[in-house]
Length: 228
Image (cartoon, rainbow, N blue to C red; front, side, top):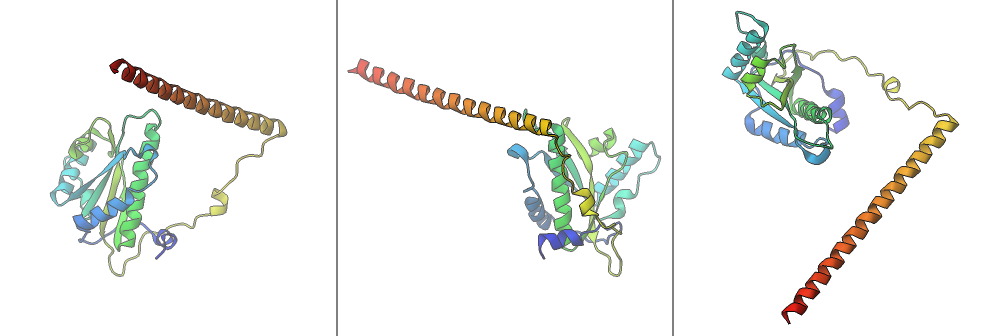
């Protein structure tokens, strides 16, 4: 199956069976999902697998967040929940929103890989997703945020996945507005100026490197002369 076929075939499964991928299979798929575009290779994400009693602990945390007396049974809808965490890294080049996009990309690719491997998956969230009790239950750090959970389990026999509306790709794939002659001229002038500044910066960097190399060579020669 090609990547195109896998993406076209993917659908969310709101109800899944009681079996789930083991840790080793999951590790393989996570390793592949982690190859998404990642500016500066910050790896601003991590995943937490919730199985067994972990799901019950999440249900209690959700109840605490909502002020409910009884634990939520929502986490028990699948045998495996994968919490998607954005782990923000200090960076002057990569803003937080871009780092969160990387974490989302990992989760989406992982859902595709799990679906292709034969598992039913649905990405769930809720108003309690970023609540303090839920963050505490997951052991999140001060620079981490939860993006939801992938609910994973067996695809039930004889059952159909959730319905997906056909995407009107022509309406969603657009072009930028046409520029007036004045706007086009201004854009071209700005591009030329940017290119000129880039060339000047490169030249200065090259000259600095050359001067440093020359000074180092001169110092080495002087040191050698003083020893003789």
